[in-house]
Amino acid sequence: MTAAVPATMRAVTQHAYGGVEELAVASAPVPVPGAREALIHVAAAALNPADTFLLRGRPRVLRLAYGVRRPRQRVRGTDCAGTVAAVGAGVEALAPGDRVLGAARGSLAEFAVAKEADLARLPAEVSFEDAAAVVMTGLAALHGLRAARLEAGQTVLVNGASGGIGHLAVQLAASQGATVTAVCSTRNVEWVRELGAERVLDYTAASVLDLAELFDVVFDNVGNHATRDMLGLVREGGALLPNSGEPGPDGGPLRRVLRARWLDLVTSRRVVTFFSTADSADLEELAGMLAAGSLRPHIDSVHPLDRAGEAMARVMSRHAAGKVVVAP
Image 1 (tube, helix red, strand yellow):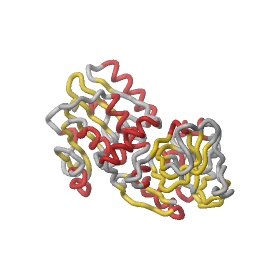
Image 2 (cartoon, helix red, strand yellow):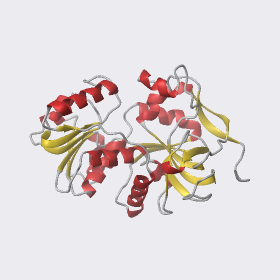
Image 3 (cartoon, rainbow, N blue to C red):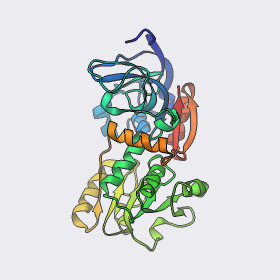
Image 4 (tube, rainbow, N blue to C red):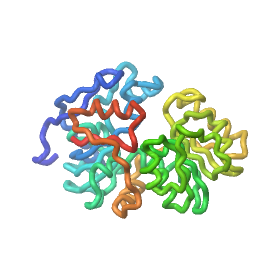
């Protein structure tokens, strides 16, 4: 540790599963980085639906990994951007003072610890808020399109195009030379169109299932229609990516994954399930896109640490456009 690092910090803590009322800003010890870990002075932390699942402890299968009766990790948050404050043994690529983005343990705090492999350097011209906003969602969009084997000249449908993953998937697909159709609500149509979508469908005026054409890739971030019905929008040899953790017509997330894998076996179209985790090389790629201006996260709102509960409630409402960020 360095002399500049305090012994305690302010952090958003959770001692029981439930709603935002279980969150409180309290004093907590500053974590100590272990081998091949770095201590990050957090400048911005972004929230994801995954954070709300851990807050509620639902689906309950999550509790097997994160604590059966109460959360073992008391400080919430994963995505962050900030400055390296200290490093543990064996860290080679990072040093105190480096600007970074990545996945940490407990990013809703003034300091958080992250594995060196889960971090990447952040160019000086990129804001901390923008960097934090592309960690989990940017990686999911990148990994999903990669799993779908997207190629230039193909057509892509993005359902939930104004969400955290969706609005980045629109940009990544367009930048790879795909023709993108985006689906969102009326209030988000204009800014989603500016992301590079050739066409934007307002789902309050028409159902995505009524589209006449077929697509090479359908990236479904909503799960508001049955997987089999969404497959009807995929051309022969194309790919459907069902990607939602919320309950829907096919049931909860585990049942949806099992159904997707079964459909992949019995249809001529690919139903692609993918697992996205932090990776320094992919984070560097996203950071480079941010610096070049080819990737632009849409920030729904920025909240101070003391109002992290409001930020979490905004994500839980499912009405956030783009990303919700907390700035300690």
